[in-house]
Length: 285
Image (cartoon, rainbow, N blue to C red; front, side, top):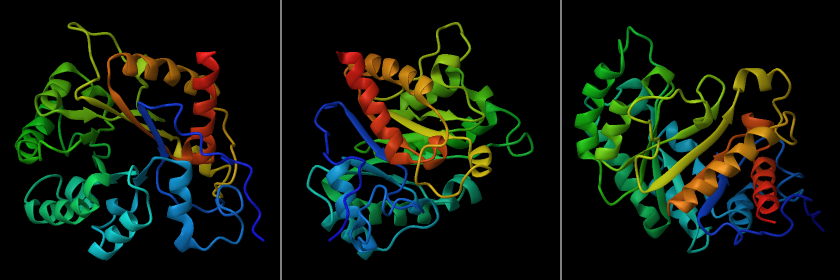
């Protein structure tokens, strides 16, 4: 008989109706026996995951467009209300950086569209650009704007940058024009929303009718402590308490929130989500 994990013995998903919480990927070293029951087959992971979470950010699509069979398998293993967030392949965001990538984009989009009603946000994740790539935000926007015009208007699109000096109104205005959400990060070299510098006019990070949050942490530092993601090794309670307050403001603005915890944030993605949920419910009382 399989031993049940102690984490998320009850799904407890209905207490945050406007907030969808999940993890970045649904597999990791250290999860079998902690999040997944010991002895569970990997082919059963996603179905089990979907009993504990309403959404997942699929990391594998960043490396390549999945096969149609893979996407149909994801669909078949999850309930009707489950939502997939998918990363755009790195050939588009990192290798070609939006240039001459229509074929790759169309192939990716047509494949993930097989998710149908389970299709959630599409994330354009960019890395850090040095000045030899783009001297500044204006040069990046000149590259970005033509691509934004091609995006489907009926899909939720989020965009992540890792150049903190680009967090200014001209950048968010470009996203807002196309209803693209600026991904909000808790990551080592980007400011959290409560750390952003003040500006005139005021800087509003909300650029779409939904919010996309990524709890990423510090990959380098945490991998000096562990590379097995079976437990919390960094206390993130102070940061998560601040995110709880922000999420309340988002919900008050009638914004739907998608938030994903990476293992590198605290050591164990599912535990981060559970801690957030506990803090949310504690603040409500």
